[in-house]
Amino acid sequence: MSAQARPRHAPMTQFPIVDGELMVGGRSVSALASELGTPFYAYDRAVIDTRIAALCAALPDTVKLHYAIKANPMPALVQYMAGRVDGLDVASGGELAIALASGMAPAEISFAGPGKREAELEAAVRAGVLLNVESAREVELLAGLSQRLSLPARVAVRVNPDFELKSSGMKMGGGPKAFGIDAEAVPALLARIGTLGLNFEGFHLFAGSQNLRSEAIVEAQQLSYALALRLAEHVPTPIRTLNLGGGFGIPYFPGDTPLALGAIEENLAALAERSSRELPGAGLVIELGRYLVGEAGVYVCRVIDRKISRGQVFLVCDGGLHHHLAASGNFGQLIRKNYPVLIANKAGAEVTENTTVVGPLCTPLDILAERLELAVAGPGDLVAVLQSGAYGFSASPRSFLGHPDPCEVLL
Ligand SMILES: *Cc1c(COP(=O)(O)O)cnc(C)c1O
Image 1 (tube, rainbow, N blue to C red):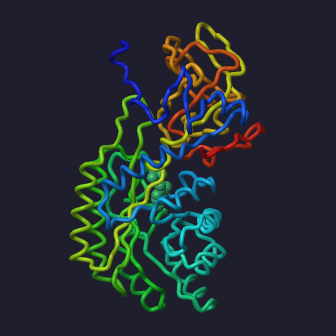
Image 2: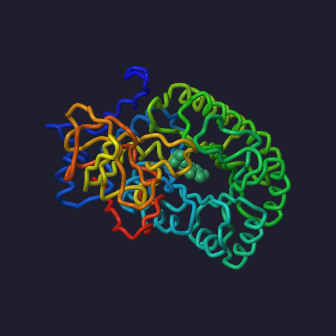
């Protein structure tokens, strides 16, 4: 393939380059590495702010923005987000504790996820957060807990829709799924919720994740809204919240283009207007994880060794798959593709050398970049993996092979 024909990464301009150094949070990556040691994750508040400001300018005032903390549950970052979004979505008792400690009002926290244990349900009822129920078992357990605690549980029904979010990196609705209640079974469950005296608040639909096609997101939002409207005929009490999910993606791989918000903005405005008439009193919510924080994070490791094997340059680093499973290509990708990677302390230099960047693990899966054009580098240089603010530190098998943990900083 010629250099022109090979797809390139979308331009990533969130971190400036000053004197040949990549800058994160106003500091050079070299200075951060000297101070923190390597490897590390750094998250830049200013990049998060820019993203949230652009999104808030695009969203209708009546649509609430939630942060799904699964994307990055670092407590300092969640606390930062709590002051900037309307609500937090959690998916475990551990995440619930982080969300409650963040300062976000419990009324604006919701808890989804299959297989909630009884202790998790109890903690959620005691805290007064909204439970997105995913099974009949959860409904029955919540009825018992509500009675025992004299505290009626707040519930929304997570619906497994009868459609999919097209072109998603990960599909989480449509067909047989472990998530939510099949749409056709929802009316009977709503009747049961009414009989049991739980506080019914609405619906939660989440069709999929990591989507870069606005038409697909618009279609999923329209279908989700239409499904909620049909199910509204069976609700025990009026809908107060309708969570339409998210799925907004970010560009990771060569050829990916950033999500365009225009059509989504128009669609949400139209849906907000319709819901004010058709579902009066219902607030619309979207819940986003990686779109809010993914581009604000960088993973940095140091080159330990440079080897040439049968003509191929290898940089062997002090970090890899065990810290950043997704960048290694082993977190749900079918075909391994390179994340955007650069030599952070030579960020101004020409990229002239075809390089494979690997970690220190004894497995051929431990790859951070494969045959990517990089600046010529060797021991001591710093490798930066961009788009690493979501599904990095917390989504990696950090005890695999017994290397030390990376540190995490919010700048
Ligand atoms: C994972 C998840 C999210 C966040 O997905 P992103 O791709 O990070 O935006 C939101 N809602 C639910 C229910 C999820 O499971």
